[in-house]
Image 1 (spheres, rainbow, N blue to C red):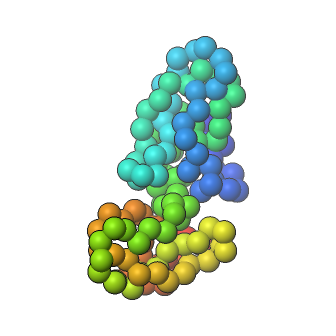
Image 2: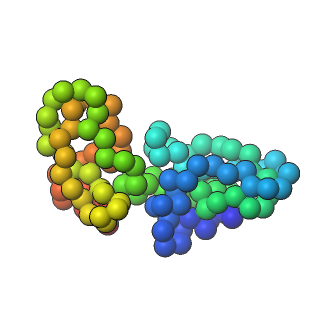
Length: 121
């Protein structure tokens, strides 16, 4: 596995949950957690699994941190403000405007269309 997340489609792979695979080794690996926007350790069995699997912490961050947020859902949040924001709609493959409630945002929340496009090419 290692650095397969660098291939085309890396951002989608980085949104996958950690998968230990089907073998029984206990290798320490890193996976990207889009909700916390950081890389975390997990135990990898040595075979199978998915592409969100990195030997090195720095490779995980370098590959996933900048673009995985683009595959998070666009969330207005539970608060009642109406703040114009932009988010990347993965189904449409483009940045779209939405009204942000003002609290409980995730990484797919940009102040301008330009910032959204720059991060989510």
